[in-house]
Image (cartoon, rainbow, N blue to C red; front, side):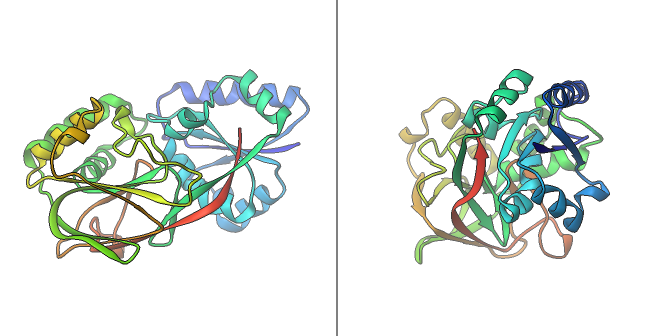
Length: 297
């Protein structure tokens, strides 16, 4: 079997290199042909990557959820089943499917060759599989990315969270779901979820499903960042439903607009730049793509 192995040199910590080598060795011992692909390298250019994935029976993605996000466009295009080897800071996709970096577990998944089709979301033409969000949490992701000089850990988020809590600005947004305007020009944090998991176990959209053909929408009103931090803490403690003002909805087509200077966006834990490589967006259009991703479970 041809197996593409995608890894991100900047994902997670130094343990990833040894884990990838061990997994590759086990797969080769089983008679598989391992085709390595590195994020940011020439083999990830579209034509070369498409040829590799079209000739592969599985795509193993070693890294975090952001590495999956990098691979999604070509995985959807070629239809290759994906398996997440959790070597990133947050590994929400692997957590959802019970995937591990244990070579024995990967070997068993390849032997079973059981494939499940799940939904993906699309935001301004770019696919995502776990969630995307606009507001203070996306601002934190942008701060982490700006300070990043290699692999990161959960500790890398501590200072950006403090900086955003006490020095950030919450942008007003308007939100529409399936043609219905839910509200206009309210400050807060919007989460658009395809799955139920979120970083640090916050899980604001705990009822979201990758199989229902809809995206879950959660909006936490927050005139200042300190209030947004309170909402996040309440979600982590499973108490957010007790606080007034939260807006929840589900739909297939979501639109978020904002006046200047707009808002920052993160998708599957990755910073997403705005138009002309700026950091802010003034409009997002999101759609669900049912059963568009094949997963090796």
